[in-house]
Length: 284
Image (cartoon, rainbow, N blue to C red; front, side, top):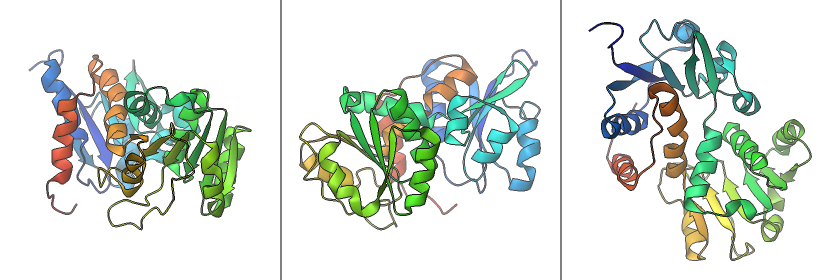
């Protein structure tokens, strides 16, 4: 096979190389779009990640996803865009000629999932975001970009929420964790970016009664598929957006950058990943 006809391949860089749904997603799109390409998982230890990323093409790849613990390092080793800089982490790498650029597709993954699951969500005006970690940065960036006028940012360590507010400006207001209940009646969108409610983690204990009937509730957790927070929201008849939807939507632009066609998130793809999430997998 010549260099000109060699199939394009992308990869996921992580350490350890835990079970990931990314190959399942990208191979589905490669198959349905009839593209001759591949997607691998590459276990790269921290002491080798600089060499691997800086010579990504020599390792046979046209681009990559990056997961823990390499997202911050990938930002430093590439030419990041405004989204990656604002979030402070790169999760998608791609070549622009000889230059290796990076972005963070968690932003559009979050927003695209909301658009698909709860059209009109951006009329909310005010939002309440729980958590102040890396995922929260992507969420806040996306909300500001879509015109949300005020974002109440709650974290158990209020100093972390203050740090994000300082970064993003006057539209973001830090909130102490015990003030969350008092903010619910004001907001049209509630977003959980914490691990609370995830399998093996403590529950997210929050009474959704003060939320208005047209409020939207989003949870970035996707194991379990329906978290107690989303179950409570659905019981009230509220629109919801789940973490699996965000996972699927955040993969779209990377695929387009690497393989030249924009894929779509279909019901069939979601069912495929849901089945994989429910299946037992060996540790690691």
